[in-house]
Image 1 (tube, one colour):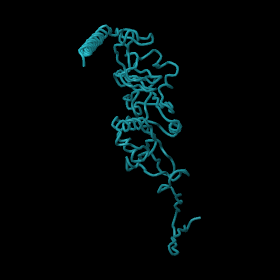
Image 2 (cartoon, rainbow, N blue to C red):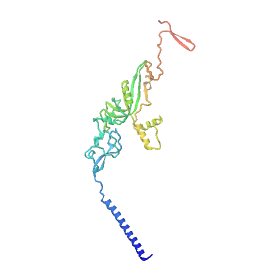
Image 3 (spheres, rainbow, N blue to C red):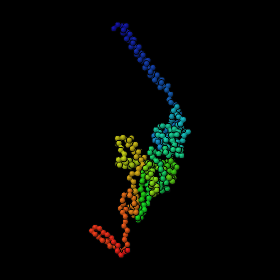
Image 4 (cartoon, one colour):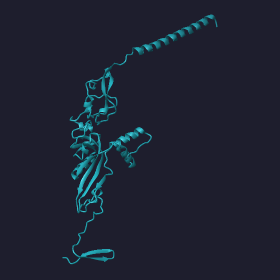
Length: 326
């Protein structure tokens, strides 16, 4: 190779190296400059957002809403801003549309008591609202609040031949209390005896409760929040639901569904004979209910003859005949 070609090769390599170095310096410096020049998005006022997912029909409580900083250029006029909105005044309102966690609460998304469509928005899909009367004792002395879960107990007296049968029966379980009187929030600081309770039921259970009110008196029994696990176990054992033990999220969804599901299966009852030895525990014989199961004393009772009697035995058959009477 001659000297001229060697010099050209060395010059080309030198130019390529200088070009690569300059390009690297330009791109790295430009990146830093760009990053430094990009200003942070200006933060506007704090916006009221959902602290957790709020499905349709959710009754708002104090822990469901929080204020969160929001980019100034993304604040809409419909948003509720800190200093202008009071979250305490939103407690007891109902979600009209599903709200995701972190989503701003806009005007018109919540509907309050007294507004058109409030109760309809509080109901779950396919559910109905029915109201029952309460007294000092049937309403658990005022310790039932909106959002609680209750059972409905029917107490009645069944008449017929002999003493009256007194009985109570749990006809419906796990109903959500929508309102007590006109109160729909659970922020009350003291128990107050209500005169009515509005319950969330299925259409069939609404019919059942309406008939039960004409039969006897209704009372509410407050349920423990720990009963949800027991209801889930009962539903799994009965084959009503299937649980995949490998999917915790799916199991949790099933548990929540069971916790919100009213039920009239497996009713329980108590008769007067179980409370006092002086009360009866079987159906009076005078009743003629073709749909009820036969009871031990439900067969007609023959009138007892008066005066002297003669018993005549013919094999296994014994006949009683009155004598000396007309």
